[in-house]
Amino acid sequence: MTGSNDQLAVLFDMDGVLIDSYAAHFESWQVVAKDRGTVYTEEDFVAGFGRTSREIIREQWDGAENWTDEEVAELDQAKEVAFRDIIATNFPAMPGGRQLVFDLYERGFRIAVASSGPSENVHLVIDRLGISDCLSAVVTGNDVTKGKPDPQVFQLAASKVNVPNARCCVIEDAPAGVAAAVAAGSACIGLARPVRYTVDLSAADLVVPALEQINASNITELIQSKQR
Image (cartoon, rainbow, N blue to C red; front, top):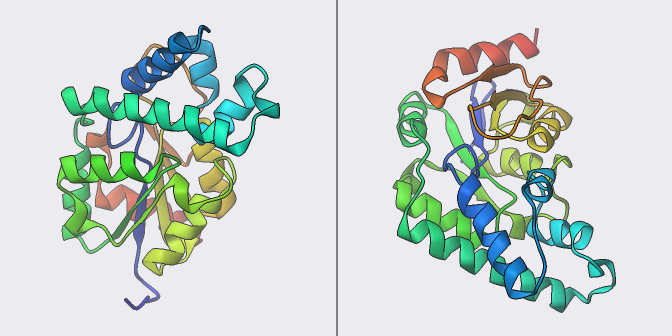
């Protein structure tokens, strides 16, 4: 793959963008919490948006700062297995997501999925959406050492699609993800769907309530406007 001065790319977050995974993730955290005799609140859940599960466990679970890496990995794996079981039964595709990927691919954008989620989750979603042939790269939480708001995931995705971050547009739904996109030097569209919680996506270059309001034209304009 070769880059060019006019090539553009779109880097999609997965959770809350390509899939409406709020309920499934919250339920899976509650499952593992109940199994371990503790409670995981919705406030805890929202506070962890954009972070890797490993980081969430270290920061939020009582005593986890003293756990071994193996103990953290065991809880992480149990949570993600529960999540995959939930979405396998009722797959929560985000309205407009699959079509947007296909439309951008047809318009010549390079496309990557750049997620803090584990590889198994990300590839399950890609397979269920049927978008693998449209993707130039996939970056997951297994590929990075730092979760969002660190820009590592978007920097790596841009490198893999061979397009500078300044010519990429990130689509995100979480403040940590928006901050990561800004830190990477990319344009950013915040997806602020009407849900049970309120997040501040004002640092994004454009905020929309639905993926159907995103298209090749407004993505191109955002990227070009940041370079003027």
